[in-house]
Length: 112
Image (cartoon, rainbow, N blue to C red; front, side, top):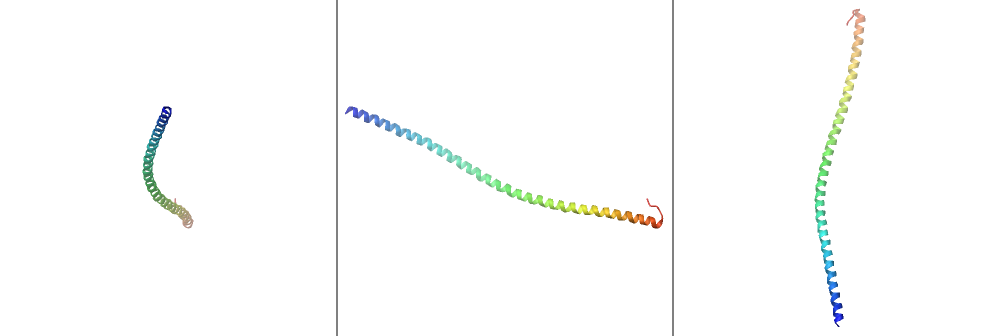
């Protein structure tokens, strides 16, 4: 009977040790869960801030792209008008020279 009691005591001690080991492992996992939940909350906060910042940047970019497109349009129109002015000036100069030569021939005078 004493042998059975000793065996029972040994089994009881091993069982208690196994339960304690399981509780320690549970505590380790619980700490890891808490750490990861904290990290998750931090990342979610950062993500919200980054999402807001991204939205603001996208709005700013859209406005700036619209402004750039307006500049492109104005520049294109202005350059086109400038080319027409140059062409008109060249035509006017050609007509003026032709008229000057014609006047010279009619009057027989030389104009410098």
